[in-house]
Image (cartoon, rainbow, N blue to C red; front, side):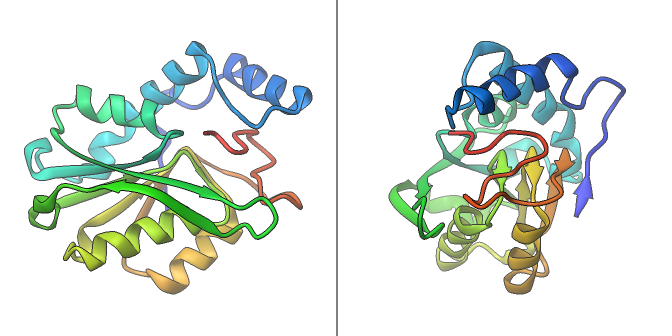
Length: 193
């Protein structure tokens, strides 16, 4: 687990935290708003060199877990990554199990030297694990995959590590735990999509 610290000010700012906390108070589980999107895009951009780890953008593919990770995908596009795939995943609120509604993964993805799976809220690990499983089925070697998140819960990391110990996780922060609904509780990203 790599916790990306970046330059001072690269972490979620107090203003961004207030925007996110408003969502908790209002009961909405959708983190929206230009400020939030811009903050996530900027944070992602700061961590891209860590994720790529000396692999050129033209040899990299990014798989976006829709729709929450779209601001993260913007940063990768701005960094000249040109191969993208999408997985529309959501989880059942009672079961906390992922459901895949749609996938669009480029057939040449297995030839990429680095495949970043971007998912801002890595709580129960379901969507991330399901996406990684799809990539492995498509022939992507697990050691080329990197999971890039904004926030992780220890429960999700533990579950993910048991199944995929060789896959590196790059994150911006760690929550202490999940709430009873399986949401991250410290940062307030909740169900970012």
